[in-house]
Every structure is written in C-alpha cells, then in structure tokens.
Image 1 (cartoon, rainbow, N blue to C red):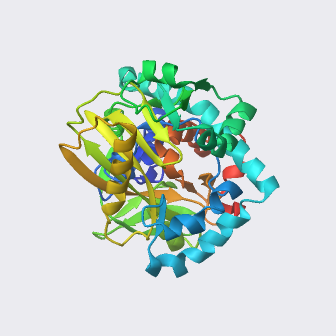
Image 2 (cartoon, one colour):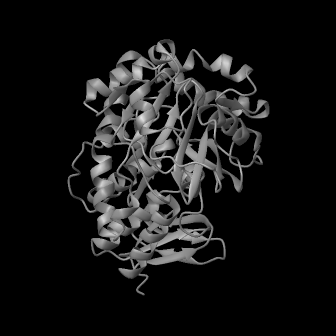
Length: 415
C-alpha cells in the first residue's frame, strides 16, 4: 500500500471511527484505521444497542442538575462520582452548569434534534450498504411510568419530542400489557417510541463495518498512537513501536481518549468519561419485543446479542480507575422490579468509557489549531445512534464539500 501523503488516518476503531473510515474509503481515499484494540472492542462493544433518536435532551437542563446532590448522596443513585475524582471533575461540572442557561439550552436541543432527525434513516442506509439490513429491529422502545407523578416528572422530555416532531404514543396499562406482557402490573402508563430501534448485536455491526472497509481496500493497524508529526500541517501519526504512519489528513475519533491525543497537538477539549456499565443475561427466562426504559429508575433493558442487556448507570471516575461492578448490579435489581419473571442467569458484566462533553452534543469539526486534523468525538450515550450520520457529515467536511447540516454548533472551539 502507498503510505504517501494522500493517506487519511483515522485514530479510533469504535463505531464512530470505523464508520468514518468506511465512508472515506468508499469515497475513494486510502484510509488507515488505527486502534490499540480490534474494531468495536471499546465502548461500542457494550452499548445498549439502541438507535435512540428521542434521547437528545441536554443532560445539563435544570431538572437534572437540581437532582444531582441527592443522587450523589444515594449509593444507588443513577450518577456516582468517586470522591477522589471530584477535584478533577469540577471544571467540567462548571461548564455543565453553564450549558443550562435557557438560550444555550434551546440551541443544544436543536443541535441534538438535528442529528437525531437523520439518525434512523442514515443507519438504515448504512446497514443496507454493508448487507445487514435485517440486523435492526422493527419494534421501538417503551418508556415506563408507575403513575401520573412519574410521568409528569418526565414531561419535559415529552414536550421536547412534541416540539421537534418525534413520533411517540401514550399507552395505558392494557395497551402496554398487549405489547409487553412481561412488564410488571405496577406500571400504569407508558410512552411508545416507535423509531427508537435496536440492533441485534452492536458489536457485530462494527465488525461488519470493519470487514467492509477492508474489503474496499482499507487497512487496519493495531497500535498505540503516541504522537504526531507536523510542520505547517499534519503529516503523520507516531506509533508506540516507533513507526510513523504518513498522511495528510488525521481524524481523531478515539472516544473518551480523544482529549489525550488532542493535547499532543496543543488543543484542549473539556471531554470526560461517563463510565457506563452493563450486565448481559444469556438465560433471562423471558422474551421482550421492545427495549424498555424506566426514567424514574434510570435504567434500560434491550434484547440484543443473543440475550438481554441491562444498563443505565453513570460513574465519573476518569479513564484509569478500575471498574466497580456494584454499579451494574444496581440496574439489574431495578430491572427485576420491572420484569418480575426475569432470571439472572448466564451473566457477564462490562464497563466502558462514554465520551461526554458538558453540553451533551458532540464535536464534529476541523481542528482550530492544526490544518489537516479533524475531530469526531463526544457522542456520549448516542455514539451508536449518531455513527452513520456522523460519518456522512464528516465525509463531506473532509472532502471539502458542504455538509447537509450546518456543523458550526459542533465545532471544537465552541468552548
């Protein structure tokens, strides 16, 4: 392969980086995809398999941050911050609060909605392109509420869906039970989100994308990226074994590790890791047709990867702290409340790093510092949802074309 100056190097082989690499290779460029792990083995491996087109609400809205002190005092709360990490988290948290200003919040809602409005169709198109259309379910997601009080507590979410025109249907208990008879009778109300589809195996999606990328002539390189070479613009990527991969374009799509790489280029970004946990149950003793979420209990259950997957907790503890699988067991306990017949047998537990900016929306942008460098990171819990759309938009941006969306809200220097 010619390792000359026309190469595009994509750093990060999660669903975002692999989708971008595939898009650029499909466009006729020569692409090298670099990651220390095999494609899809990071956060993409353990996500909740949801194309969650209705979940773009900024986490910085006041109804959330007012609850944070109570959550932090609750050992089983939906958000946990390890005490030793709190001082390092403070600057990020101050930006999080600043993003809750009303005018800023409206702009962030619109930026998230613009991506989510495209996400389902773009994902379906990409699945068709790689020959796996059948890997997306036809059913949506059910949001559960025990009573009107819980429903009213989530009303801001419903109002945003109404404002931006996202499909949803309010269900009473009999309609809910007709769709999912395994759900506890304690649930008195639900909202059906028909376009929140699921993938039958999100890891298989990434590996299939990678296979298609290689089939088009792309190269995958397993290595650590330790630096960059540049003069007036980027010229290559330095690897841990001393090699330099030359290229005139570098895309940093390394998820929660992107900030470390950006610092090597003299560019800072307020990127944190929202550590997410899941429990995969391979012998659940029941079948679900839909994914389910219970906002008041802060968890999700998805039928995927040959069983059902339970997740939903957030832990702020940085990139290097070991996992605390008690976080995963909290969501399993709550899932058993929603699904009384659930058997917790044949389980595995997982922890991964979701890349999160304090204003919730991602960066999809050319570097403000180094010509030839691009960033695609910070997709939070919507990496799988945004991947196909992000690849399409970044492909046009890198190619010097006009993207279908105005990408100014997602620029790197907005902070």
